[in-house]
Image (tube, rainbow, N blue to C red):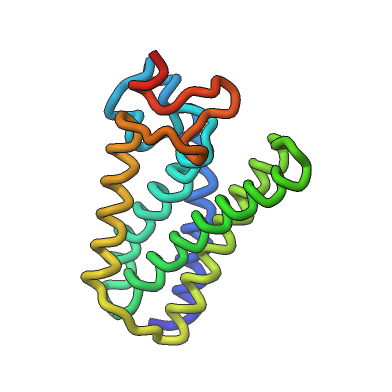
Length: 178
């Protein structure tokens, strides 16, 4: 597949993730706190819940991209999975680094980091695609499934550790809010 089509798809992926990720920040409240919607949406302001805003839109672009590339990009799933993980790792690392330095979080920086993480993740995916990086597709799919499963489970059965703690309410997940 030609580079130009891959670049166009990556740009689409960035824009799609920007839009859907932003919407997913609000869909849980808009849905009257629907449990199914909670799996895909941020239910609080914890770092973990904000990772959903990256993961699920990027997962959708992986699925759409499989059809778009018509399986001509043999490393597509692997490359996009690595990009998704990189975006999530950037988000966590950046958040804890800057809040550790400043002693607080700032909404504008948090929002900007979402956009930077999206661009970074899609760029890394692109680099892996054009360099014909090879990996095990089944492993990449397993990683995506495990992450999706973790987002679902931890929405309702949230571990009491920092990444899951809502800094506004000091609560964890849905069940533990009560």
